[in-house]
Length: 122
Length: 105
Image (cartoon, rainbow over all chains, first blue to last red; front, side, top):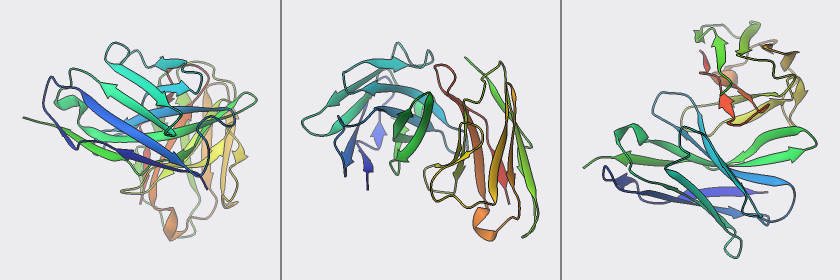
């Protein structure tokens, strides 16, 4: 059974960089046809896709985050990470990591972490 | 970006009721649409993929239909454990986008 677990600081000061790591267990991050995504959810609001990485290191980002977000992968640790620079209060949210399973043309977020709450405040 | 809308934003229903949620995409996305259920304090859970296919283990009371720009999600007989927020999500093109959600209580 694949499991994902987010980790990182729960409090970040405005203008600083948010850093989160997702540890994947129960399977290798390099096996299968998967992308590894970050998705966030402000309190009481909907879901927003930030970006994803393939194990080759290829990345895609939402234009809403393209200039501030960086997603990287560490295959030796079976982890992938998110860095979001120049944060403001608007970046306060529950951050999820998720596996994007690809079968033929179909893409689904089939496994999710429990989420990591990040608050941006001085 | 492809914009996703859902209606209603919330609904109240009783156990045994048939519940229908609609999702509309701002452009043709063929069948490239998924439905997720999210309970408070939990991550979303995939129910339906490619507009109408059941994820493994999902009860048959959940179903999806549609293609192009208009999609429907149905719970044939609402159960107490179905109280949740439901989201549609398109994967036709990046960035992936979600609907704003429909809260069922």
